[in-house]
Image: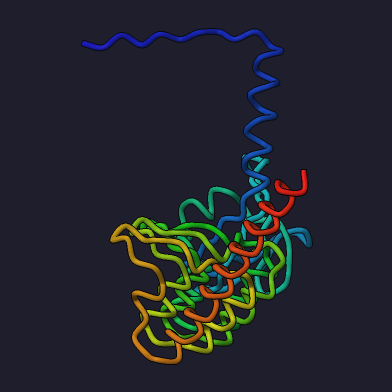
Amino acid sequence: MYKVYIWKLPSYLCVCVCVCVCVCVIGQVKVFRALFTFDPRTPDELYFEEGDILYISDMSDSNWWKGTCRGRTGLIPSNYVAEQAESIDNPMHEAAKRGNLSWLRECLDNKVGINGLDKAGNTPLYWGCHGGHRDVVEVLLAQTNIEVNQQNKLGDTALHAAAWKGYSDMVEMLLNKSARTDLLNNEKKLALDMSTNAQCASLLKRKLGSSVTRTLSNAEEYLDDEDSD
């Protein structure tokens, strides 16, 4: 038989706990798919239909959550979302994986994180490169806070994926965004080692060569400075 212990916290500690919770839920956008149509009763409430995508940006109120649907923002009963909507995990990843540019833009407009990781540690950029979706990759690389060198659980980056799939245009786009060519995956392979066509290999060799030349040049300058001292 289990015993349950209940501690009564001082009022000032309760306030601190509530504030911390509010900060966490406001800063993260959660995405749901509506299973039924919701008819609002007041102008502040958000109308949406079955199948619509809901972007919940503020869950600080336990009864009413702030959400956006089809460019409109309003309040949604929290119990409705919990009971009558389906949570969508990693919506940005799904959009990038499918090459669904309109959904990707919608995710960006609704502040869904672009550098989030799925269960395999992949980013949306990785999936865009893996699937050969050039338009998706272009949009993602245009974001100022995009992380191009994130490694997944296998150690692969978006550059590894693009090289392995033979998408030379995406390899070039990533290199222009300062993607690192010296990162090894868990099998100790560079993106160059995984390249499946000559054009990808040529781009990666050229970049690797320039990086080595730059490193040697910096080393020579350092030695010259040492000699002058």
